[in-house]
Image 1 (cartoon, rainbow, N blue to C red):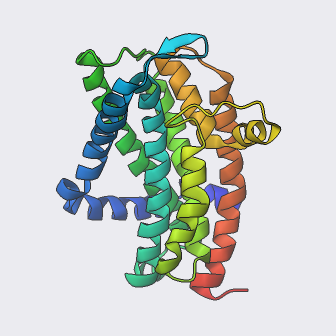
Image 2 (image 1 turned 30 degrees about the vertical axis):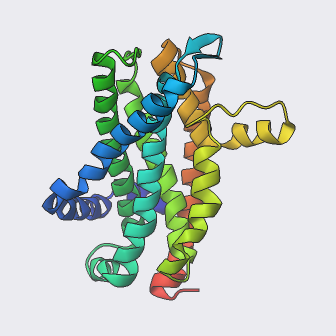
Length: 270
């Protein structure tokens, strides 16, 4: 329980504040990707490719591809941001910059460092998701989208929880990859299958038992579908409940594993 209680400790939030301070020094360049990426994706895929895709039936509702894609981009943004922040950025701070070593000479313990990284990754993922929401609002005001905004604000805590869970997954690979050159392994093993086979960019409909099982245990699928139902139909679905359950399960399982593996790597403990 000490590990989970460390989430509320001031040391964990001090680690988060440290990362925020560093980020704000270069905010003008760091903020460009999350602003332009969803715009480019929505224009290239939603408007460009979507103009060649007729409206299709989804959940007994006729939707355009742009409308289908928009909530998927929102879910995918949180996933990508939190995972990569906990993977690449955390690895650089741990291995090259020796930031973790400096923090551990203070009152900060390794569990605080782990939680600080997870909370920061989730916070950044949530911030980028809010940027995407404003981009989608612009598309809505421009008449390209017709979305239900009631309840979207209520999903922000869920997006933060998703960020913590995906950060735990990223920290797992931070703890086990031998060098930064091996970062392409989690990209092909996790990012691509989890990101694309999750009803984010296209519907994955199949009666095959394996496909149904994959979608049932896929947290990103439930996040994307839950947000999509909420934004397109205004419906609070079981996908949101499943997403909360799976994210909590990921946090409960992954964070202790991350800490144990990082103790071996950082502190040399057995």
